[in-house]
Image (tube, rainbow, N blue to C red; front, side):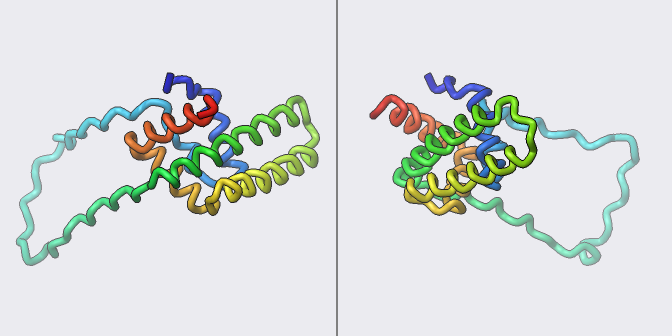
Length: 158
């Protein structure tokens, strides 16, 4: 049942993020990404002689930042906000179906953006916090699965 988050839903997510001024949803993958295959260096040039160690300062690669911890409460708030944002997106898309007047479109988008920010705040989150949680949802499969489970529960009335 988790796969009921369809491509259409993902497009809504991207629209909502664009309306809200963020980027988190636009990058949310439908399926977990396959790990990248290591690339082999091209073997077209002969190896260059190594320079002496003292000529090359020793640099440590920076550690990858850890994924921020997302609490169940934050995830529940994000799910509530997500549902509201999705409803706003649906409403706006229906309003704008067949509309060509740029002024009407801009007004509807501006109002939708305001409504989405209010929906996020009513869910108990600041827009920046919502964006951060949704970034984690897009990047961490475990968190994404928890999010989808909570989303299904809320949509089922649970």
